[in-house]
Amino acid sequence: MAKVCYVITGLDIGGAELQLYQIIRRINPFLFSPVVISLLEFGPVKEKFIEAGIPIYSLKMKKKLRGFISNQEGIYRFFKILRKEKPDIVVLFMYHAIILGRLIGKLAGIHHIISSFRISPAGDIKGRMQNLILRSTSWIDDLTCVNSERVATEWVAKKVIIPQKLRVIPNGVDLPKFNSTHRRSRPKDVFTWVAIGRLVPQKDFLTLIEAFKRVADVFPRSSLEIVGDGPLRKKLEDKSRDMGIENKVRVAGICESIPALLARANALVLSSVWEGMPNVILEAMAAGLPVVATDVGGVQELVTDGENGFLVPPKNSVALADAMTRLMKLTEEERERMGRRGKEIARRYDIEKIAKQWEKLFKEVLRS
Image 1 (cartoon, rainbow, N blue to C red):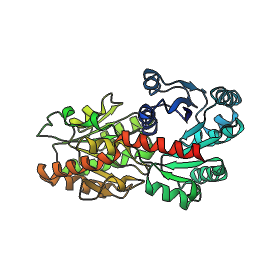
Image 2: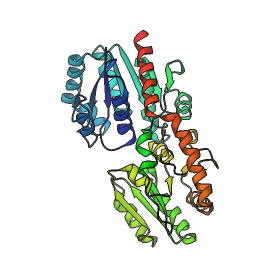
Image 3: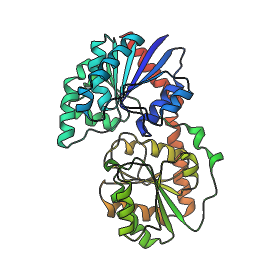
Image 4: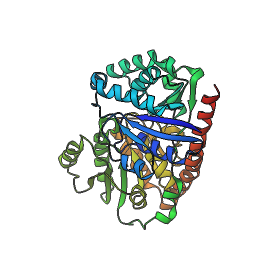
């Protein structure tokens, strides 16, 4: 049996954090024994790992990179944990974990290191600096894993990932959680859009609210439920009020049951500026919902325009509104056909199959 240490920046509610939990739960523990390290203070996802009996540590570091680097106590604790646990493989999720994990893992004498890139590269000044740091430490990886073919191509083009070390393993979805037994009867008189994600600039919910104002002008009996939490919550609520649609837009906070939420919705909308492979789209497809989404990251690997939803360019409220109204103008039968097509696509991403791909990756690394 090999020991695998998974290092992640934090354990707040988010796509990467929940995907890591879903993967670890399904990897055979008699082949690969898990341990998890969070750089930041524990977030809500910690409880899931504890309930599953997975050993977990927190380094209690500060969030910004300068805080990580200057936290000598946390770095030393990281080093000591690795020396104590003696993992055969270290898997690194998210930027800060990749940088520190590569460096400290190398110092601690870890034989096999895998970095897992979850989103597209950023193009701003901060992003270019991060890319430079990632590129200069890429030699440490045995393999570098990316969750989308398109995102992988983008990282290779930035010369951040060495092509020979690149492997693509997509995100997975827990299909039984979203099957028809969870479906509630949807109200016939109101068309409900749902958007899910942290309330941060990446998700661009401000553009979504602008788009939904146009939608509501055409379809007065429609509503938008934005599910998630984050620093932009008040700004989103103020934006809805300023546009006079506060009675149609609900910023709902964190949802305890995404399957139940999707069961009472008519469609999912994703307005992100950048993504990797969005879990929310996989979950919506598994629940049989059509999707309108911005064409970013690995979205086009999930949504085929006109088949199981519509794709639009990012940061374009007019195009987003047009696609949403176009979907609403379809007959219920046409939307259900889109939903069925989405369910077919989602089956390719069964989390059980994805976990097997990770096991295969670990075996490849150990053979090297």
